[in-house]
Length: 348
Ligand SMILES: O=C(O)CCC(=O)C(=O)O
Ligand SMILES: [Fe+2]
Image 1 (cartoon, rainbow, N blue to C red):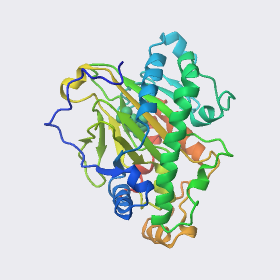
Image 2 (cartoon, rainbow, N blue to C red; image 1 turned 30 degrees about the horizontal axis):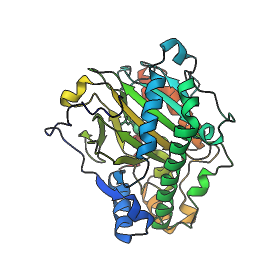
Image 3 (tube, rainbow, N blue to C red; image 1 turned 30 degrees about the vertical axis):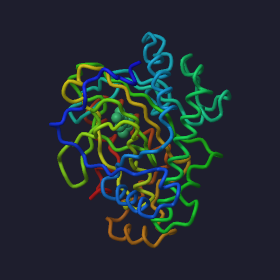
């Protein structure tokens, strides 16, 4: 089973590694103030952290199987579900469909994205249908994974509400189950011995992301630096990060850092790389705008930033579709137009 990769060589010890804080989810749930403080530091400094005791290991293992069966389907079958060029994220993204840098270099990864809305409403279809390995695993694997991952992100959001001086529910409410959203579960697969990026430098579009990694390859560029650091996969730990929407809502207090997926380091490069991710994104019609009118802490951060910095003038769904659509233009212009908060000084 590719997800477990028990035979893969270890992550090498001679590559630069990001010093992510390790946060204990069980302690957060218990209201441990020291752990809550550590989470807030992680989200404001780097915007990335490890989370242990998250309780989704089993669901993620099942999802690696479901997604690897899906990506093993013949290309012609997968192409029936291709996301297309309109900026839609749900479904299949074939290799070479998006640019990874300013020179227009194409990616070598394939993804499959399942909409949170479809997983939670199953068997009712909200956005689209899926191939058989996913429909067969929906009830037992995909939906439980989505539900648990969403609950983790909502717990983290409640903590951020308190730390940012917001009222209870001010962030969670922007992700109401009464509205469709761009939230999704994803598998990313990159081939063995890849020579180019699997996913180019980007910040995530939404609120909070969760990544389950077995092999290395994920890299982050800490704010204010120009160095790429590997995020070393740790057994039973997930990697969590802040996305653009949360950076904007918080007036830049929480950081949405640039990251990318490169071939796994050292001897791990000989293996195909699978990762499983979950993205919480705001309701489709939620305006992306700082919440300065709800918090003095956010208001004072916004007051220090350039005018209009955290008011891109779009809704959450327009923001996501612009970034996907322009990445698929496969040109330098597309690459520039695909950029998010990371390039407009949210992280300055
Ligand atoms: O595969 C990974 O480790 C990260 C994937 C990622 O950054 C993304 O899908 O946005
Ligand atoms: Fe990402």
